[in-house]
Image (cartoon, rainbow, N blue to C red):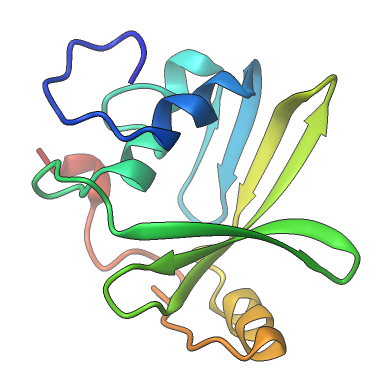
Length: 138
């Protein structure tokens, strides 16, 4: 990621995503954390890191993002690349051609289940909290 000295392999969409997010954006992951500002969400163990890298070994993530519309609102669906199950839903709010807020519903199993059922996707949720502390992974 930009601004780090990481030796991890580059994933093309990771740095691109950080470019379209405003410097003052907020990323809210209900039930876990809220990150505001580029320094927070671009840090080594920040939200972007956990979307593009495995928290245990730093290998490229198997997650796949897909843009769609749900109830007249643009959203991002997040699928686990191992079994193609829907694991998260994200709402993206923009202003002035930049992302200002990302609301992540990975820890909202009812939301993920409702969206998955609407589209007919298999769903696997994390429940209301991760089964491990991702911030402590090295």
